[in-house]
Length: 426
Image (cartoon, rainbow, N blue to C red; front, top):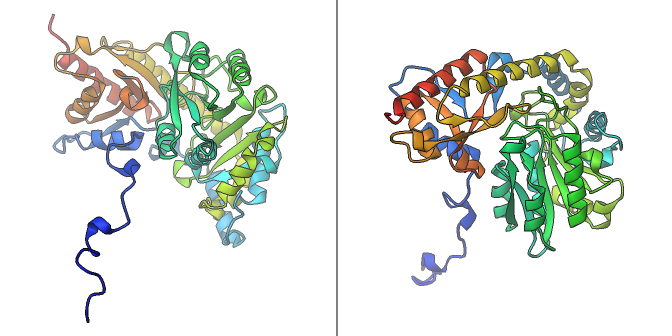
């Protein structure tokens, strides 16, 4: 049978498909991609255990196991056979009501189920709101530096211009609000605030959050409040939800059960609109969120079905235990790093699961920068730390302390030995 395509017509140059430039290797930076590169440098001949001080997943350690209440809730939802079908695009109503009630405990303006949209983890909540905001021509968005690189990756994918404002280490990593006003313009749509802070381990005060809201109102932009580490605080400042300032500027809160319940793999998150003045609704943001969710995948229904029981029945003792362990680990981390000459920890972590520290490469013999430091540390000591360049700060390091205290002591000890070995000779 004669081929219906001529040689010219069947040539690959005429085919209509093409790889998205965004998906090409190296086009975007994520925590996963950087840690994968560093892990590839581990020496397989090293018989010591790998110490992961670079990621935020404590669930593999015995001291950071979720509450039996959560496991029983999942089992009960599965056995009930009530959650085997498709979910509404915004999520199952019972779950949305439960999350509205749970989050309202921290708010003066109470939420309803209509304010809550369920997502596949906090990552999808970020995807949804950035995709919605990118529909405005020439839009730009303000991200913190250092920050969480997933925001930059999603914004790049959606062709949303990114502008960075600095967090100030000398002021407990507060937002440089003068810089925010300097970089914003008429095309700025939102500012992202991460509190408790990832990667810095800071917790913003009520007064500072209020100033952030006033700045957002002055600029006419909404606030995206990333509160995935809500209530994981162990210092002087309590956790205060940004939603309490929604009467000043509209707030979209993203979060999940992944950190507080230590189940990042369950992938249950939310996007919540804090909009007492109806600004988001008036400008079509809420309708756009609903439309976007209509073309997205949904969280697993049995996990949605378990949410009311998880939120309502988890004992406060479970949370107190986790916070106590994190406090112990934060103290170990801060006290140990003070004894490493080439590393400076500007502030003691008060929340979340990590801390940013400054690396002085001029004190080291054969280390070029923070990435080189982390690659050689992995190879020589089987310790993984995230280089600050992945988070927007060159020659800084993010140290995650949410691991077994004994493992943390071991890892920080290896880090100290590595720095001694590479120290410049006096």
